[in-house]
Length: 480
Image 1: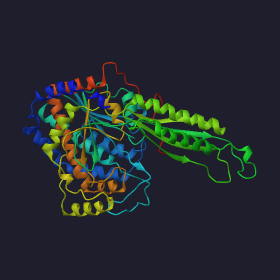
Image 2 (image 1 turned 90 degrees about the vertical axis):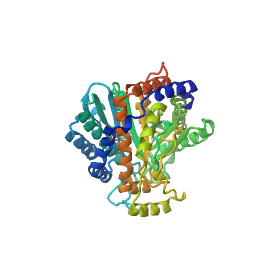
Image 3 (image 1 turned 120 degrees about the vertical axis):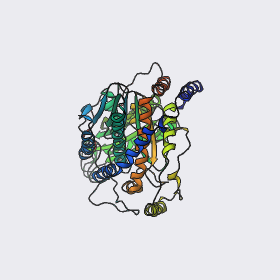
Image 4 (image 1 turned 135 degrees about the vertical axis):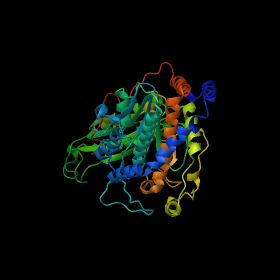
């Protein structure tokens, strides 16, 4: 991916960005924008906690999506619900005409992990899911920024359109990919997003392209002792595939990632399993390389079925492009983040953070939540369906310290902090940075154009978007 960064490109974009006004985010109306977010903080903190409590899985986020839509509708946004054939997806718009600035909002939880909002491990018996990636904050914080911009636009008679995209099922469901494929971003000038984290940063950062599938093996059941010769084990097919893929790991590029879980392996040892299933993720920074690795993985599945006398059906579950970074827009977001500053704990929050830190096993990094990390160009190791948006429209994001420093995503510690004021304080930082950057984009045509120039050069003149998940319909039951 980072071969896309050429010295010529960066030089052109930086020259353009240096010609922009550096006072845009310091005017009185920018201060009013930040103040509005502070004044309405309780409303959006409560919204985030409602979604934290719902902890709904991908494509099942009925209450979470509804809560966001209600706030936006009450604030005068026009709502398109059920877009891209997804009941919980929506687009909320205020204003009319150009420019059109979009903000992404996620709200799905993760399965198999739950936690009370306390600094020691306590599984919630009545919950099988939790916001271990902080998407409750993502959804509420983006909504707060969009509403703040809506009031700023009205107060200052600013032309254009602000859009909040309610994007379900980021965790393995690729909700945004279906929205991109449906053309919902085709007329947008710039898209903004953010993500919860254990630190504050706005880097020009890429990610790994990612494709997943369920490999469903079908065999013949039989008594494993009395008539084993009559059986054909679907589990043997899964294990044969896994063995070959594990050998493959030695012969793929170093940046590749391959991981799997066996989701069905049979019901009893004395019955030859007639059905077994394994769920794979395959990742690489470049979608082209990913396609080649994916073909080898699927060939291993077919070989496993052939060798064990079984059949295999391959259901592609999701596919995400890598994030296409944008240095010009990221530097502007970074400037605004520095103006806002980091998170400050009170005594109660610090005590909570100290207790969480003891459980992390990585040392004590408390204090980093107050800092803004230096700007850098970097290649991330995660994957996100924001990638597909970023290959369609110039896109920029940031991360803020909603978790105790040192916390990993997808952990009980992330759920715990995200259910407290530690999480909502970090969310507020994100809302302000999003709002100020959206303001800059509405007011500054040169900034929008510089972002567009870099976007088009990085993407390449011959690029044509193609969803990695093909033509499949949204897997609305993938978490059921």
